[in-house]
Length: 319
Image (tube, rainbow, N blue to C red):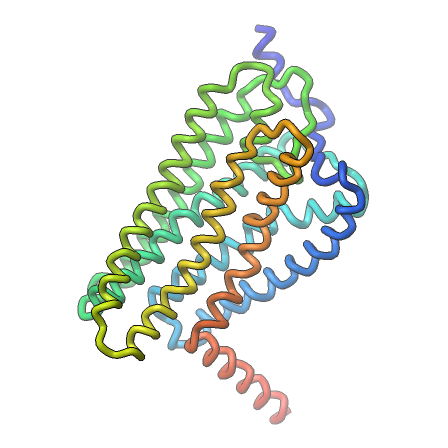
């Protein structure tokens, strides 16, 4: 009975330590994070708008890219604005309900992105390895079903992990060693053995991260084999450019996200700082870079931007 009572929320919620142990670093981060967040909003919003307005972008590739942009917008917004407010006001508290909601949303979006990136790799595999069957295989209904599967699986995983995490007793510990509520940081607050939760978490990592990485590797191994066999240098270059953007995004996102688990229970201050910076990288920097990576290397997106700007200029001149 005493253990159960310990699971009740503290009246003041939780304290998000964030980067408060490095006050000089906080001010630098405030400027950098604000800039990155604005760029994230603008870049991903532009991808969403362009994919809706330009008929040339009404393809499976840009359908999934628009979903990725929506994910990145929500992903960063679930943590970054609160972090900026905390740095500026020095108020580190978050309510119990707010912490649950933040963990559920952030984990759900991150899990969905993992699966979506593997679906995008499959789309590129079909486009390059089976070009004659591409429109038949990647029809609109299948694309919608795969996108729904990604969202459903991602948030289903998040629901399970969120419930299991917040059922753990904390025995008066409410200092979260991060700038947002996440599973590894919350497990550190528990005053009982978290072995079961850690096993479940790593099992989820295998399902949500490792298996999709395996599917991505399988897709790109076949893509490379096909591209090497293309006789035209221009065709090989076009194929590599098409896949290069996605592969770079995969490496950045998965690399930083999986590396973050190495700092699940940091003992030293330097390890804590590295873990928080990794969380900041996959929670903000990667979503900010995604639209830049896709637009800088993509003729269709560049053309859509020029077309949209041309329409706006004509509108102003007519006015």
